[in-house]
Amino acid sequence: MIHFIGGGQMVEAIIRAILANETVNKDEITVADISEQRNTYLMETYQVKASGEQMEALKKADIIVIGVRPQDDLASVGVQIREYSRKDAVVVSIVAGVTMEKLANFIGEERAIARVIPNTLTDTGYGYSGVALNSYASKEQVDEFLNGFGKVMYVEERLIDIFTGFGVAGPNYVYYFIESFADAGVLAGLSREQAWNIVLENVVGSVEMLKLSGKHPRQLLDINNSAGGVGINALHELNRSDFAAGLQRSVLKAVNRTTELGQE
Image (cartoon, rainbow, N blue to C red):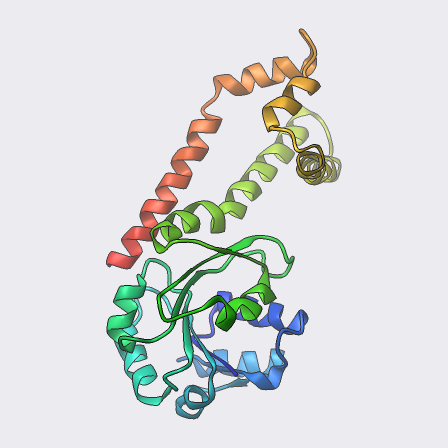
């Protein structure tokens, strides 16, 4: 049994993926959200059990997923887990910025904890979720569940905030690039549909080319750019911009904000 404390967008995305991938069936999922409207929505949409009352669900759960916001009342959540859950249940926290040590203060020492930063590409099967385990947790307890909504990368906890700002926020940077690239095509004179289709093919094809060739991006750039040609002129102009440094600053800002959330 998997019990979710909180039924927000990320929890919904996980539920949708693990049901679609048949990791579990709907009868093995329970949810408790403070909003009855949200509970009703999840029940009607996914046919899972959802209720503000969670004592019985906590007693039965093998995996307890804490899916509340960092600024929510984690202390109250901890009291309920302490009081009602089985001691052998693993607690999976998807709360950004909250360390396993801090979480253990709420739910009790000597509890198996997995700190997970889920990827936002759950419906695609792509993207890594970053996972750190404390000394009481094992991969066997969570691996099947976590692989139900994407790929899994186990890391030391000190890297989790970096993983959040870089890996999990990664699609944001890609979406922004795609939007800007498509706008450039429209600016040059293509229709929106034409530009959009060309950009998507270029992005997917370029990623596949990197995988197939095993080459560094710079090597493929060298192949594509003939002397004095179109490609090298375009690259020269891009090199004059703040593109690379701006992207790197964005990642560092996201990493720093993740750390701040856990301290608020």
